[in-house]
Amino acid sequence: MEAPEKDKKSLNFIENIIEEDIKNGKNDSRVHTRFPPEPNGYLHIGHAKSICLNFGLAEKYNGKCNLRFDDTNPTKEEMEYVDSIKADVQWLGFQWNEEPFFASDYFEQLYEWAVLLIKKGKAYVDDQSQELISQQRGTPTRPGTMSPHRNRSVEENLELFEAMKRGDFPNGAKVLRAKIDMASPNMHMRDPVMYRILNAEHHRTGNKWKIYPMYDYAHGQSDYLEGITHSLCTLEFEVHRPLYDWFLDQLIDSSYRPRQIEFARLNLSYTVMSKRKLLDLVKQNIVNGWDDPRMPTIAGLRRRGYTPASIRAFADRIGVAKRDNTIDVGLLEFSVREDLNKIAPRVMAVLDPVKLVISNYPENQTEEITLINNPEDPEAGSRNIPFSGELFIERDDFMIDPPKKFFRLAPDKEVRLKGAYVIRCERYELDEKGEVKTIFCSYDHDTKSGSGSKQVKVKGTLHWVEAKTAVDAEVRLYDRLFNDEDPAGHKDKDFMAFLNPDSLQIKSNCKLEPMLANVSAGDKFQFQRIGYFCVDKDSMPGSLIYNRTVPLKDIWARMNS
RNA sequence: UGUCCGAUGGUGUAAUGGUAGCACUACAGAUUUUGGUUCUGUUAGUCAAGGUUCGAAUCCUUGUCGGACAACCA
Image 1 (cartoon, rainbow, N blue to C red):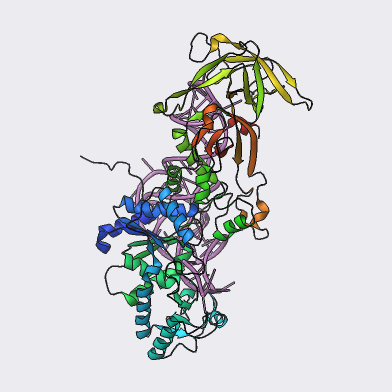
Image 2: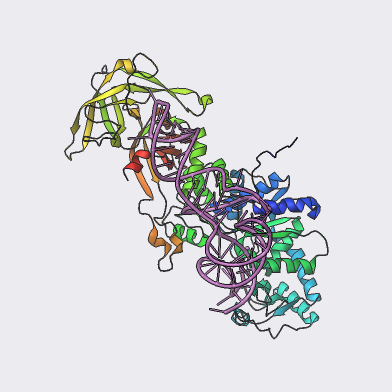
């Protein structure tokens, strides 16, 4: 009789608001969100949070989500960014409502509304310099003073605004301001600028306009025109909300209202997120472009080997709230391991090879070894790889004088070669520099994997590749870009002071199993016992390049650090 | 010395006046032909002080700490 709610996931504060609004029939119980990037740079993981939030909410409540480019500043915006943003949103797995929208589509309507505000005595043209206006605005603790032009007649304002639009004045000569309250404790209400003169070519409207609306004037009205119900933005816009509402109240006579709701932006440890700092990294060639695999950009994560599903899962896990937060980058890494564990084929690759010779294996003999492609996915099947008496193994997997917990190869010790035989180390040779050059082992033919003919317990299993058929590759080992948890959080030091000198380590002499030669960019694998890797976009047949997405969890490495 | 916002284990996030839960991390154990995966367990939290109440993380007051706001950027 008591029907206990299935342990449904608890709601975040935005979902609470939405469900309340739906219950109350607000805006006809519609849910319509929007993701409103300015096309002036590449999207990063913080944007991904917002994308997942906005599109996710629309999906959850059977609503819609618009992609809207906030292109009100022609001096900063470019078509190139429009395209990359669209690609990133789609790559994440979301589809926007109808076609992408642009704030610039509303320039005409916005202009008419501005004229209306002038006619209502709620806006005026100011001739003062930027400096003067700024001075008159006061400070957060001191009220501002009124502009001498504040009480111009409606007719004069109309004329002047029209002249601004016509292009009669140079950049910066005049602005249109909302007439609100110069003494407001909220700086944004002290007669904010609505329009400025900009003689610049707009990426969509070309040279048609000489005046461009400011964010505060454009955003709420754009939301209104698109029928947005819940307009989500980050915390720094909280103080803008009274202005958002003020414009709508002056202009709109309807019960429908979009509502601005602010949430805390994402901060990730060991990286920086501001567009300016990311741009610095690119400009100073600290990284190789916006899609460098060390960048927290969506393009960078993609090239690094992150999957859309892993980023969506991450966004889901971090939640959304209003308090400042810093997410441990380890959570992002967990999310990608979790996804790749399920889908990435297991392969054998030796990053730092050392020759291993099996002395009692018949000379010139080769056999096929069958390996399971993915123990987590029965559908993934199996494959054959060659095995012979000459192999490469990982240099780290052999120690001349090992500590007690070392489960790998050492003189007189036994290990299993993954999928093949148990071998015993008989001896080894050093080169001139004293480095191990060749390891000589014997194998026990009756221990072949799957044969069941002999049960031998060994502590360790090593990955390997057959020497003659191995393919060469370059492998790029990426690590976090900064050594400091919060590189941008130091007052006394620039974030560049915390760069990790080892954020990229190139291994140029890697040996891979044969099938890894025949791949295409973006293909993802687990290099057994090492980590997850993907084929870089610059990889070519004959000169293969693999990127490390993330290492496997490594208890042995942790024990030794 | 203004206005607004926030404060729950190491990091995030729930609990909507009624058993402080979940995820990640850390640690311990089991399984394992990847020192991976999986499974089990453990440590660990309501900023402080008052008040309201049978009962407060939740409501009220005061304080403390953190953040945002003074672009013709978004």
